Amino acid sequence: MKQNGVFHLIILFLSGLVLLFILAPITGLFFSSSVPQLLETTKDKEVQGSISLTLSTAFFATFFFGLMIVPLAYLLARKDFPGKKVVMGIMDLPVVIPHTAAGIAILGFISRDSTVGKFAGYLGLELIGNPIGISLAMAFVSVPFLLNAARDGFSAVPIRLEKAALNLGASPARVFFTISLPLAWRSILSGAIMMFARGMSEFGAVVIIAYHPMVAPIMIYDRLGAFGLKYAQPVAVIFILVSLVFFVLLRVVAARKTE
Amino acid sequence: MLELKNISLNFKEFSLREISFSVEQGEYFVLLGKSGAGKSLILEIIAGMLKPGSGKVFLSGKDITEERIQKREVAIVFQDYAVFPHLSVKENICYPLRAKNVNKHEQDKRAKELAERLGIGHLLNRRTTTLSGGELQRVALARALATDPKCILLDEPLSSLDVQLQHDLRTMLRKLNKDGLTIIHVTHNYEEAVSLASRVGIIDSGTLEQTGTLKEVFHSPKSLYIANLTGIKNFYNAEITGKGKAILEQKKEIHLPAAEKGKTGFALFRAEDVVISCEALVSSFTNNFKGKILHISPSITGVEVLLDAGIRLTALITEQSVEKLELKEGKEVYVNFKASAVRFIDTAV
Picture 1 (tube, rainbow over the protein chains, first blue to last red):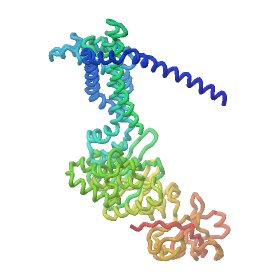
Picture 2 (tube, chains in turn green, yellow; picture 1 turned 120 degrees about the vertical axis):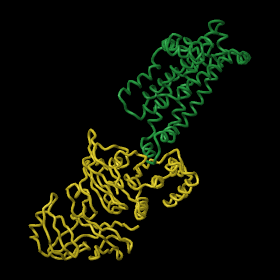
Picture 3 (cartoon, chains in turn green, cyan; picture 1 turned 90 degrees about the horizontal axis):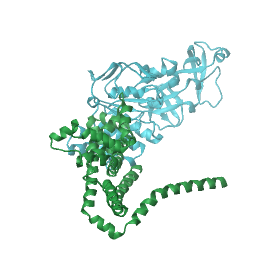
Picture 4 (cartoon, chains in turn purple, yellow; picture 1 turned 135 degrees about the vertical axis):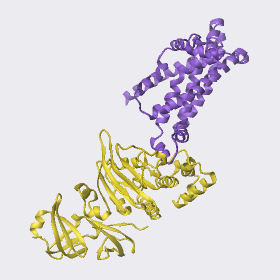
């Protein structure tokens, strides 16, 4: 009994340390800026522009890639094919490679000299230093979050239900849209929010594709370098608050899913 | 109407071998076999969810082996119902109608009609996640019927229901069959076969061992497996004539556990429950008849003695008993069995 008590104390102590490790810097950051400072920063057009750029590029990355990722997730959940494990490994690669390296890889892929870059050039688009390039960099590093969540969501839909729907005369497309997708949508939504949040907070890959226009993580870094900690802190606080909204949203969706 | 010809399908650890049988229009065909015998695979092949390795499936004379699953005109009701959890009862029933682009008014009318017919009219707007097993089963049936199938396939439809619900659903299935619906029903429970089937098929380890009417299969099992599975040699049409009494094959009155007067069905008892004696016994056996031995034949489980006691019945005894009682063909003996050994299975609609 006594041994048990000591064991629990050690567990509590270690858990507390980890919690503190996450909470202390964030709480410290919130107390570092005064309310007037925060209000002033909120009114800063550059900050506003940067946050809106971050949200829109992350949204487009999630939306457009989502249109391709969800079918891929369905394929991976439902079909067995040669090389399936290799495909799954490839899709998880962005999680393990350093994000600056990912940025370099994307840069090579979409630069003016590349095929993609040349093609975009014909259409009058410059991907480097452009919101489209930023979206591509964000998507590259955040794809696995949506893919894995959606795949798990589809896997959890009983195949029986799909077979029953086919037997009831539905086409495969109808089965997908009326059975599989509605039953997996919470997983897909929580994956999409994760992808969006991950894309929004990306620095390493984005900074290589576009220092300007500045997304919020780069602006925080830029203010720190150019003006010092005091100027970077309010921007960081505002950006964290915006991120928190999505974090709460994710938790709500996840909680409903468990219900 | 439906015919399977030499259907084979090989998996790593299991194979269906040369399955052939046919089911006539309006027939109630029960495929009886233990779990893992391949019963559900046969249904999935008929429904087009699995492609057979070889063999053909015909429906109304047309080869449907390669036909798309949606075009087969056979509806399947799964053991776990597979009712769509995110749709209401009505939306479930309307699902096949929507797939056929039936107009909204017609959908509503048809859903209401089917729900009323299956006794779930009051549940139409309920979410399916709040329904009981029996209700889900009816929703799945109504949804299957909404496709206007030529034939309906039922995979262990009664196995997860309690006794009362089983009884209700059996009555409903008999009624649907009587109304002309062709039904193929797979089960591991011989009582279901007895209470519902017009014909049965017995399947073991991927092989169809025997098909025929209940009497053919129960009286003359073609293999030990079938004999063990059914275990019933004494199997008769029966009508309850009074309290604890029934007349078998309109010939012989026997005692059995109480059942409602006027009910018709089958009475059955095991051969090992029949006791042979040379003298009339004073005992708790309420069924005592004088009879004549027609035939004595050894079987794997003992010696089967076929007797004529107004009805033909079989007793299963040991070789020692045959010697001790000096039994031989033509000898007159007494046959005795307890009323409680007789099982009555009601088949009325």
